Length: 233
Image (cartoon, rainbow, N blue to C red; front, side):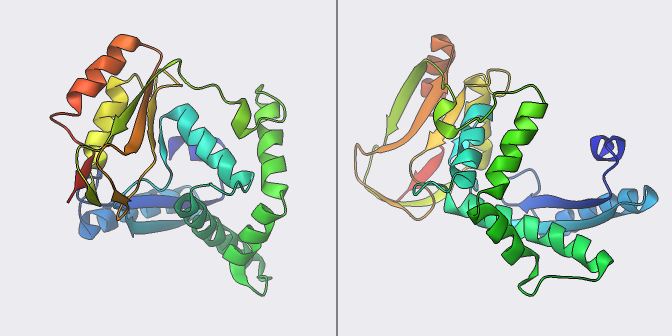
């Protein structure tokens, strides 16, 4: 919140995910956190909406700076294999923010904020603006998902059994990502090829580990034996 205040933010949507392996486990706890944000925002004159939502798995497939950025670009570029849950969540949150702004001005679009956000995304305007922001911050001009360089060391994790993914342990996911070097190693992380309720076959490739450090990669492989990410039944 401090950064938002320093930047002069006037309207804000805060995502508060709830889940048994998330940082906040219960909706009652999420509501308490939301109240604190709302109180602080009110004090600094910021219009805020806190979106408390149940989160059973990551919205995207990538865990780690570069891998998450690639997911974002997949959505902005409207790739056919983009993470649709990430797109849906982004549109919902963007829609809430637009609704908050339109409400103050008194001129909401016919379809509401989410519909307006979808038009901005599908027209390519969101991608163009994102690339403009990256350029103005000293980044690569016309950055694309294909231009992102991944870690040189990787390991493909395969399922030890056949079945359906019943649970994704977000806590273990974050621990393994940190062992790989994320977020300090921007290229390190995990890329999920399967998500909740997906069926998998024995020996099927289910996710990939990335790290610039081959020893960290080995440690992450070993850690998975005690801290599995998927529960397959």
